[in-house]
Amino acid sequence: MLKPNFKEAKKRTNEDIKVLRSEYAIPEDMKDFGLGKKYYIKTYGCQMNEHDSEMISAILEDMKYTNAKDYEDADLIILNTCAIRENAHNKTFGMLGRIKHLKQVKPGLMVGLAGCMSQEESVVNEIIDKYKWMDFVFGTHNIHKLPEVLKEHVKTNDLEVNVWSNEGNVIEGIPAKRDSKYKAWVNIMYGCDKFCTYCIVPYTRGKQRSRMPEDIISEVKDLINKGYKEVTLLGQNVNAYGKDFKDKKYNMENLLSDVAKTGIERVRFVTSHPWDFTDGMIDVIAKYDNICKYIHLPVQSGSSRILKLMGRRYTKESYLELYKKIRNKLGDNSSITTDIIVGFPGETKDDFEETLSLVEKCKYDSAFTFIYSPREGTPASKMIDNVSKEEKEQRLYKLNAVVNKYSKEANDKLVGKIVKVLLENVSEKDPKLLAGYTDTMKLVNVKADKKYIGKIVDVKITDAKTWSLDGEINE
Ligand code: 5AD
Ligand code: SF4
Image (cartoon, rainbow, N blue to C red; front, side, top):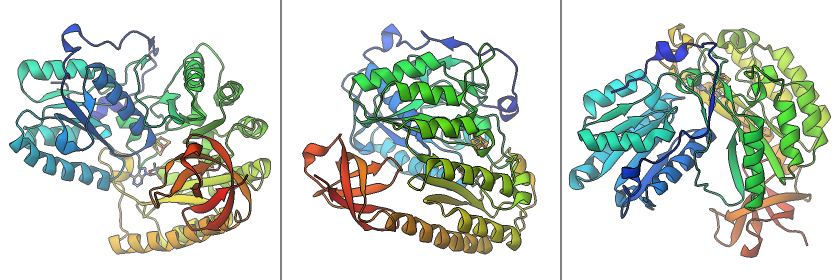
């Protein structure tokens, strides 16, 4: 049994990170393990987790498992979990309650926990104490070892816990079974060294490790050959890409240009920390037509006092300066979105008013808004939190009203305009419509024939709502 330990996970050593290209392999006796069996993966949380699930799927299919449409049809269920806020945590335990019943009527069913919650000491202890019926737990650093984890579980027929506290190396060559045929997630780095005081990610995802540029570029070229139209470069803090290279100077500016030069039709990247956003990066984004003019720039709070307590290392003023620089350079057709936390420990009414006034100034295209959720082991969880739950809920409500007003305004401006949309599939709203995104990440429902699926087309916007647009093909 290998349990996670937060004290270990917090450590940042100067040890060299190696790139391992032949670590992933299915042991001979596991190659047919999934023959005739079905798997189901339930994914919570961010894009990084979605992409991890694409890898877990491919690994299981390498063991001859096939995909089950529903968890009730599966022989193996994996919950790929998120630890960022309490509600993600509660959802997982709720789902485990349902699966327990299923396991009672289906004794051969195997159930495993993966993702960020697996990296939390307290969660793993709870699983060991109260969820003994589960089969295995593995973490974010050893996804490529899933076949060995399953093998060990079968050998002992006991709950197999195999979670590494430290990140280890960069593993290349893990396959991915991508959900979309047109747009793909591409990891460019793992982990985060920023240690914002509220955030659990630096503990669950480890030290920052950038992938080698040549590995990223060759993955993008391969995706182009397979017909992909769009890549999203993924990392917790993509602007810091390359800062961990010891032997070369190669940063996000260089990577963005090199990815743009591959000729892929669209390049996106998430998430940016305002701290590492350089002028050079803004220039590169402006220079290449295929780099989407869409920036997700989390501000978290509009109060410099709270930003300091959050450990964000910028002020309201320096954020606004950066914001203006980006808008000026990328033009009115660009789109900027953000993340905001309300009710951080000690946030006063005045601090909150500053957040509202910042949103009034930035007029974001949209924003993800959250109530602060204390995460065990983080510095903020030890700060005195004297804002009541009701007050926090009211602040969130007020903030959302302002955020939504500007989302609708930004969408209204597009009515009558012609925009490019990558049509991905049939609309969830209406099976007669197709749905897709503009390069500025706006959802559009389009009256169009199915033959347009997978194509980037000119769409005339006919109507705007708060969270989506309606349009028709402009021929
Ligand atoms: N509580 C609430 N929101 C959080 N986020 C990260 N940690 C917490 C937390 N403890 C939010 C931040 C981040 C987004 C991914 O989640 O806004 O940008
Ligand atoms: Fe968390 Fe801050 Fe790192 Fe983002 S930059 S993952 S909020 S520690």
